[in-house]
Length: 381
Image (tube, rainbow, N blue to C red; front, side, top):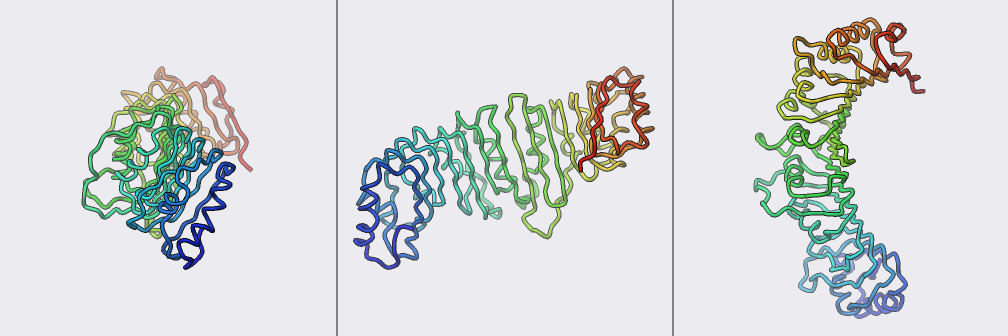
């Protein structure tokens, strides 16, 4: 750590900046932990302006800066000459971020507490050429009554991977509407409980309003975590890991009825859930999508409800369905045989079925004549 408790400012300057100036051109990895509160010294920005100036850190590729929290009169952002900087890690207030040479900067890790969504956009605006960005707020403020300020969209032309956590649903909805990335980018938006607004956006509206722009939906639910991921054929993805803010409060089940109210272009869905909703709700959810592939991991009764939904008449649900992967899910061979026969007689036969050998009761021998491809896998050890 730069600085020694209660040293005079002049002594800190000589102790820190003189050797730093000497080796600056050779430093490739620099970590600064600056605590002007405890060490009663000047700010890092002030120190750099006075004693380092525009000295070139010609080899510096990684810079990690934390602290510099005090809002002092001498704490205007300094300028650091970092022509080859590629990776930046910050744990500072946005007003204290030094002005850096960012022409080669591709990666940012930024951690702060109580950030507003507009402040997150402000940080991204500072570094428009990023390829990878991770932002963490361990204490988001979900009680503010003020609406997020409308502002221009922040365009991140090179972004490949963007992770923002932890935010409330309202914040994520705002951020997604105000951040533009390439179609191939992977975005992860960690959700932390509801924002407390009765009429505000929900997890279902976050997912549903974007289903028409993606080809695949994966939902994994446990008692403590719900993770929904939308994926496109271009390779881009949008992931919503969602957990309760109160550790003693279980997550509510995702509402398939709410998802069913949105247009969908989903080609594939994957549901890994302890239980599925009623047959009626499954029909409503599945019907709007041009689904060709379903991956399901659930209990036997829930799987039975899914098969019943796919047997609905007179208008068969998911007429383009080609394959079902139910590995890890137990089922009755007789029930599956009836389902396969039904789809065949309706002219919408299933082409491929993937199952776990030991979970088909009694066995799959009766499927071979009514399906083109039967894939059987061993149970995981």
